[in-house]
Length: 76
Image (tube, rainbow, N blue to C red; front, top):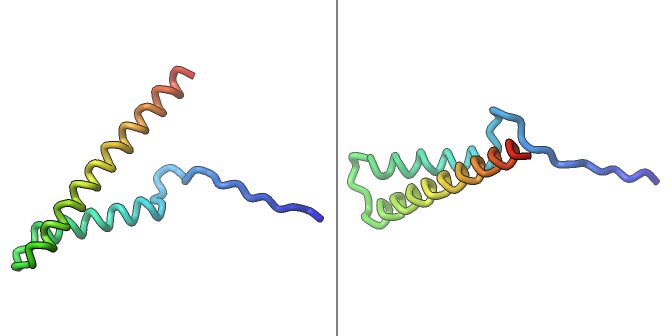
C-alpha cells in the first residue's frame, strides 16, 4: 500500500491567508465601531478599543518576528 503524504508549505508571497483576512476584518470592524457617529453602547466601544489594541500589539510582535527571521537568514 502506498502512503500519501502531503506537506504543508508556507503561503505564497502576496496571497493573504485565512488568518490575515480574519485579522484584517476584525481591524476594520473595530475601527468602524470606534469611529461611528451613531451612539453605541459604551461596552461595545470599549470592546472595540481593546480589540484594536490587541491587533496592534499582535502586528508589532509579528513584524518583530519577521525582522528576526530576516536577520537570521542573512547571518546564515
